[in-house]
Image (tube, rainbow, N blue to C red):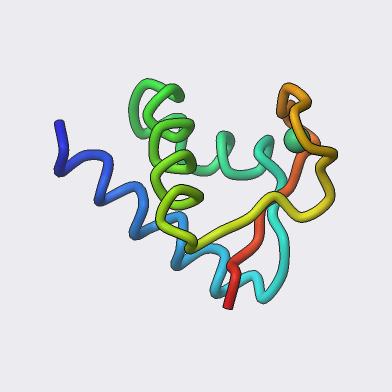
Length: 75
Ligand SMILES: [Zn+2]
């Protein structure tokens, strides 16, 4: 289980790097949610955010993120 999440964290970071800008949750779920339970994508995003790798690009604080919310790499 931990491996699955860190694999996803890796591919999501790589996708954001390739994109060179923000990607929406919808895009990330389309691309990676099909690999397995889409909830793993959410867990991976939570870890990436906790670790300071990504941030939500355009979100207000404390709202419920939806498909059109976008994340981007912090550096
Ligand atoms: Zn949001």
